[in-house]
Image (cartoon, rainbow, N blue to C red):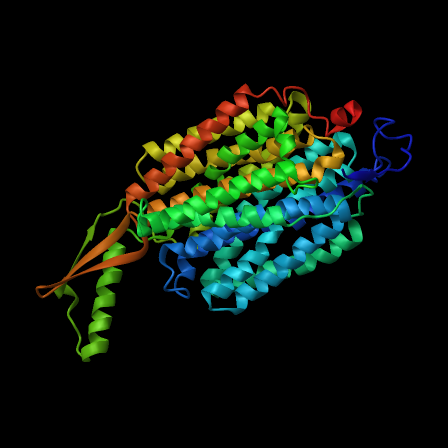
Length: 544
């Protein structure tokens, strides 16, 4: 059994039984909000990298020409590695110090970005992305830092500020990424992200204090190995099942192996004395329902921006037809030295598609990308304040109600970037409520000595929920490619157009995340937790 180091509680703590974590109850507002801003900024690498890379995937295929639709693994791997690393880092932060682990995630992110910026090998690039994925845990550690250091009355607001930070990144990331990619190259994004981390790391060292809370226990990585391997095998099946054949024994072996490892992970976690994820916490409905809600609700926040980045940056059918014709003419000239008249090349698409604006990445940012992020930035602190007054369940219900309406719109309406912009603006409001509600529900569900492991479980849930929906989306899109039927003076060929997908692939993806969002809404409505005002964990501490 783990033990907790305690100090005699000072007079200004909320409860005489509360553990001394180094809470800054006597600090000035200026110091408190300076610490909050630095913590929030350091976690911004997570949404910054996700938003930038998601929007730039089409541009990156010019370097990684042989990966096809699997280019989405540049994003999927964040959820996979993040799911394995988050519980370990969350638990280690309780044992070794949250600030130390917070900084460690930043160092891993910096090294990963440098690797990605320097390589043209897909394998090495994924290794770099895997290292950068350790930053996913920075948000979990940030929640622990806020709970341990910030006075109770500011905790719901502080958690809401992280939600606002996500919106801030959602607003500026497309602009910065678009400018860098359009004027330089996709590698410039990773140099920017590395420099961002390099500048902020000294600020974290100088400004953010370490917490006093320590939980003495060993860190057992065996569970993380089972979790990551099981998730990897399952995601590979979901991502490649169409290509491999969903029912083929060789394909099913990946799924069966992945599920067995995940089941073994649960068994091990129930029986070891020091689990990386305390399954016994799941007996507490406050925790289990919050995690269930998050697992189903997070998918739409990953798929909508990815889809919009693809759809708006794809040329319309006339523009794509012209590109294909020019490619055939150029290839003919290269092979024969003769100029083939363009009017002899006839191109038809099967199936066709209705979307496509041909935006540059910066054009996508200015037309669509930044606006939902700006709304999320405004809504995040508001949702945190609402949680403090009314309880975190209300923001959760609002989040998934709004996201459900947005999801219905994506399914029902035919493509128009203006229509989708309006729906995405609505989703931005939902994002802001969602990212404030979930962490506040977890903070008020467990005692502070379990904050690291419970926040780690929340991080795993968010990472896995995003990764699964992304893998399913990738499979659906790859299953509905657009093919060009090219006729040159009676000679016909068929060519699959890379990174261009039929309408049905996107529509099915929108149906999937709409269904998961509705499940999350139902869970939020029926849960009893979060109906009283959020206290920043004070109620749990007093009960202990």
